[in-house]
Amino acid sequence: MSADMNSERLKSPAVVQVERTFPRFTVGQRWEHWLLFLSVTALLLTGLPQKYRAAAWSLQILSTPSRVNLVRQIHHISAIVLLLVVVYHLARNLYLLLRKQLPASIFPNSQDFRNAWQMIKYLLFLSRDKPLYGKYNFEQKFTYWFLFLTIGVMGITGLVNWFPVQVTRILPGAVIPAARLAHSTEAIVIAIFVLIWHVYHVHIERLNLSIFTGRLGEDEMRKHHTLEYERLLEGNNISPPEEEAELDVQ
Amino acid sequence: MAAPDRFPLNLRRNFIYSVIVLFFGILFLFAYTPVDAGDKLQETEHYCLSCHNNPDLSVQLPDGETLSLYIPTEIIEHSIHSQQGIECEACHTQIKTYPHPEIEYKNSRELSRSYYLSCRKCHSANYEKTLDSMHAEAAEAGDMDAPVCTDCHGAHDVSSPDEPRSLISKTCGKCHDEIYEEYLGSIHGGMLVDEDNPDVPVCTDCHGVHNISDPGSELFHVQSPDLCASCHADAELMEKYGLSPNVYDLYELSWHGVDIAVFKAMWPTIHHESAVCTDCHGIHDMLASSDPDSRVNPDNLLNTCRKCHPDAGPNWTSAWTGHHEISLERTPYLYYVDRFYISFSRLILWLSAVYVALQIFRSIVNRVRRSTP
Image (cartoon, rainbow over the protein chains, first blue to last red):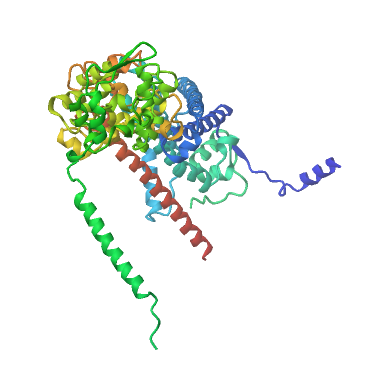
């Protein structure tokens, strides 16, 4: 019976047309994103009540001294998880970059500035065309590097706050209150940035789940990562779909 | 026809007479009330003193103690009670006859303590307060030396307790001699004794008067910054001495201060480890921070920090911003971080908000254009 159905379908390929997908993220990268997402969320949720400790809502959460300890412990454990992710990420990618096994597509270049300028012109109705992007557009690169630097700042200042006595053996004491202020403020900056910028670009502008699935559909590849799409077609001898649709960049 | 008189004529006359008599009676009373308390007759007092002004008058108590019954006339005359016309029997209620009833107390301390209740008759509010005090607690625990009213206020020589103001602290010092000595060496005690300063606190300003609470409790510790703030956050008062009135506000923003604020709000009686004012500045021996003996003098600060942070190194003290606002001169690191984030956080917020808003607007316009042929 099922064999019958299969033969039926094979006779009419138009009905079962499946969109081709392209690999975008490796399993390792997808794991990294999960760990990053979970640890940063835990850090924010446990950090904010500490930042606003005297506020009424915070007093509700930190309602006993042992809760305060618990929240601090969760914060520290999440920080260690994030630190491990960062170490793994840096070590792996630096190794791959040096062995020339990883294209340097995440690094910003002059094309990104031209793309950003073109995008601004497009957004201000000064141009009809959106810029064409490679594997990562400048918005995605900005997200990556902004998070990269922020995690660096948060990590360093966080460790200073965690081990102030040890840190002041080497550094002047004045770094402690400075680190505390930086840690506390940077957290808000990154929270706002992720909520506005990242959430808009991956959930509202279009639902981009490639960081979870690892693959991106052909339409999206062609539309949002045109140059990368073309490169993949040429490099791997993948033929474009039979109906050559016009590139709709609007 | 006229309405019948409600009051018969003779009754009405009687009423008028009584009003007149009452009026003059009251006038008479006012006129003859002695204005000067010194004019009090003190008949009983004179009567009692006819025996008790004898320096040799004494009695043997059951415990073998000799209790002097000599009351010098000049002392009792100067007591505030005598001047107000209050007689001996107001306090010595059980002595109504001569010869007096047997003294039933074993020793003079027991006798003194029994007069605690005599004060209550008139000073009931203060008496009630003393029942909640640390002193009453000590007495309940069996310490018969714990003070009662007369130990601080005096008995036959009772007088205004705060004339001069330094008398208050001196009175406490009768028992708390070591702390009193410490206090005299402090900036507060020194100014009280040397210049009779009316602004510095005496013991009772911080500890309370009659309901003196346990200063060793967690509750007292967590609430103590408010005590300091009652003067040190008073801009007018602090200006007189060139001190900053912001020390308390800035403390509340500090690591220690936030911790204490939370404990105060949520768990005031639970043990906490954060420092309050006195943990760094000292309690009874606090000095100006410029004083070389001050615990918070830059030379001594590290040792003070090490009380709680035993592993702290020499750089540690500069982590403390010292009750000062962020400034380039004092806290340059903090200043630059603060400056940077004021601009940076705004830049990021506006950048992402405007960029995303433009994107939303452009995509809406595109959609409208596509749907309209």
